[in-house]
Length: 252
Image (cartoon, rainbow, N blue to C red):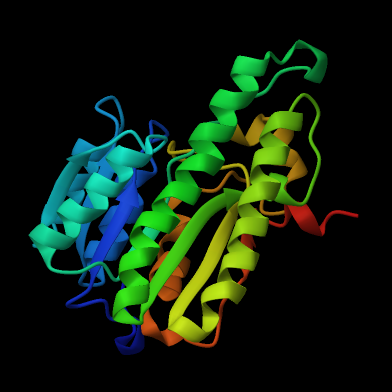
């Protein structure tokens, strides 16, 4: 992906949180291709090892930091380690996310709390731990990877929609609070994405036929927007959740 000069991340240090969706390698690769060194934080069963290889393939430094993003002490230790080993933190990408679908009356308290912890609490903890360091330096870019469920309802997905709404509100309110401190906070609201390449069989899916773009998104579709939001080129953009959903939200 050609990188416009004003989107250049050379000399920048980024942190991205990992999960098991398989998006992290593509997103981390985009940051590295733009010139950033990248620390990947996640649980041992996440895709962080693959992400590190993707970063190194671009000749950039990768740092693996095993972290439970729902544990405050571990998140603080992660931020401290990245700052110590890599010198600073310029960019935070809150990518760790879990999907969940179930009829509302069947959702248990534990399931609700687990989802809120992994999707919302992890974003809160990482923004707070990394944000303290950005505040001390007077600059930084935070990108929260969210979902279109922040602004639309979906059958059997009340918990997921509530979590995404919280992420959008956190993004907007935090952007206001830190806007005069040199920190930009934005988000990407993903639609239906898959790491698999579109094929003839997938084109027959009812969901795909519903989408104006007639395909699911791939994590690489987010690459350019992520690099832009992580760069100094977006200095006048903050508090925005940019939706990438193949036109799904344009439906009446």
